[in-house]
Image (cartoon, helix red, strand yellow):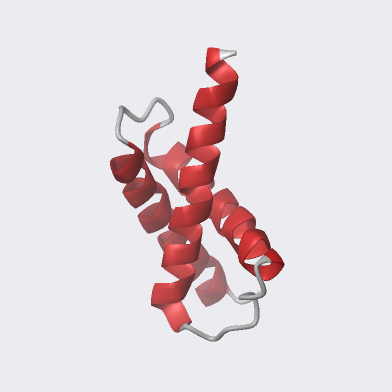
Amino acid sequence: MALWTLIVWLVVGAIAGFLARKIMGGTSPFGLIGDMILGLAGGVVGGYLMALAGLGNTTGGLIATIITAIIGASILIWSTRFIKKS
């Protein structure tokens, strides 16, 4: 993996984690690093869900990747809140 690819993944993860936290509301107990990790994991979850919906092979570019990661990160935030309440 090229260093440039890793940097792009980290930037996309940071943007997605930050925006998902803002969309879902509340404070960020994990900080910026946690938001980045959440965004990266959200990208994986969002990509998997998009593939299940039949939208996995679209080439939407960077914006579509960020939107997918935001959706996945939002799902992760919601699920962790749901598990914490139980």
